[in-house]
Image (tube, rainbow, N blue to C red; front, top):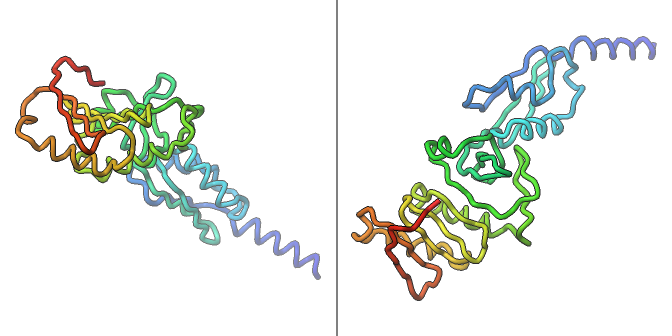
Length: 237
């Protein structure tokens, strides 16, 4: 009886719990098929033949535009792939190729400078990296701690100047600069009191002298003294 029961249970398991419907929810862009392929889940496979965590990791690694994925199995035959997309906010040069980067600095799709500028992405000039894998955050080899990079990114996101910043040079943590409006070089030094420095820059740029086309270097690295030097020969990016 036990043997017959075991055979019946196995038969039910193999026959009833067969995937016939895979759905993708949460993707605004039209690449649902890419997400399904990346997951490794196929119609005809058994519903319980794979681990959710492994399939979720495959999706985020192989689909750089997906920030996170959750898999919901609905017996007897449905798999729901629930994804959260990340939009490109930055771009950077990795080994001679420009790649989009998310707000959290995950490496995304390849791009070119003209398209990135058109899309309103901010160029990040990063310290040297030891690895930059699609779907993952780059590993920096040229710095002992990369925390300052995320501090700068967060501060820029919260600043009134966000949307006007064209590029951020993060290669030297003690001499961080930003290209604003394609005309002004903001020198902020290190991350000490960076929110305050950004607020000072906002006040300075509100002056009438910055309503023209002149280029200028604005140094706010020293909170006790802000300097402005007009230099129309200055090359930005």
